[in-house]
Each structure stands twice: as C-alpha cells, then as structure tokens.
Image 1: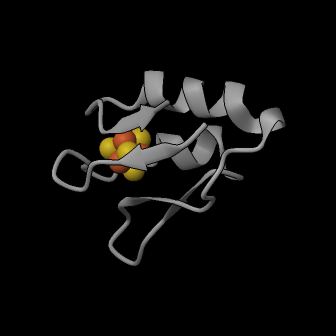
Image 2 (image 1 turned 180 degrees about the horizontal axis):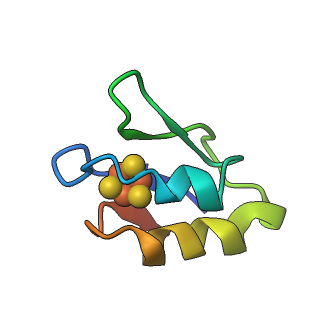
Length: 62
Ligand code: F3S
C-alpha cells in the first residue's frame, strides 16, 4: 500500500497525523506529508482511516 497527500487539496487539518502518525507527518506549514514509501501492514488500517477522515479528501491510499 502507498499513501499520497494531494498538496493542492490539503488545508492542514492534521487529522492524518493524529490518526496515523507512523504514516503521516506535517511539514513546516502544517500540511500533510507521507513519511513512508510503503505503508507497513500494521499501519494500513490507520492509513485508510486517515484517508476517510481527511475533510478535504486530500489523501489517497492504494
Ligand atoms: Fe491535510 Fe487532510 Fe491531513 S487536510 S493535514 S491531508 S487531514
């Protein structure tokens, strides 16, 4: 599984980081970043939940 954050959609709500801090970080402007190339199996559920909870629908997991 890979996760991506669309920088054009992200508004810095930070829910991704709150829900899945092993997968998502925040850059210096508070926008979501992806910390891992491949999401480890034990964090996939959290990554999906983060994508579902992003108010801007900026996160894609596949
Ligand atoms: Fe951005 Fe959504 Fe995370 S708006 S900071 S990708 S919760």
